[in-house]
Length: 244
Ligand SMILES: [Zn+2]
Image (cartoon, rainbow, N blue to C red):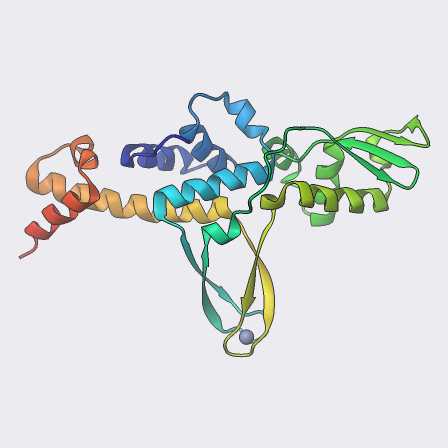
């Protein structure tokens, strides 16, 4: 992964402003892997994509994640903290792109869902239908008692088994964070979406950075590029000198 500069961060932010959440995730990774074809990045499994986004988050903003949410039982607003290193799972790099599953007399050859699959089902309102359609897109071959069958005929129990297997093979695709409410002791899981989280942080950072550029450029006459080339420590020191 290439080291991001402040200029890269502002470029990704500007390119992502009016884009979907899905495309923003890809923008981050296209910037960190300029040597790769963007289509190849879009074909990374969701877990592989999100694992790289978590690593990028560490590089850009450190490993402590802080967020807030509301307790579903008592509506108490709570702040939670987690560490990227606790979310990143040591997994063996998958050498295969295709996998096999057998359920009773059914045999399925499949691949893992990627960003293109998500894009294809994202506008489906019913989450269960979207999930099933997503999995069906990933079936390369489906047969019953040795006879090939169309993907549309995938029985529910095969869809359920496939969903479990995908979750096992691609553990970063769905990151659940275990929370406990200090007010009522209720425990529940929240799904952590690294692409939205990272985008919100980048957006906040970009707004603060543009404000800082405005102040320094007005005072010293430096260009945006010159200010961004300064280390954060120097920028802060120059800002401090402007305050009476
Ligand atoms: Zn509560």
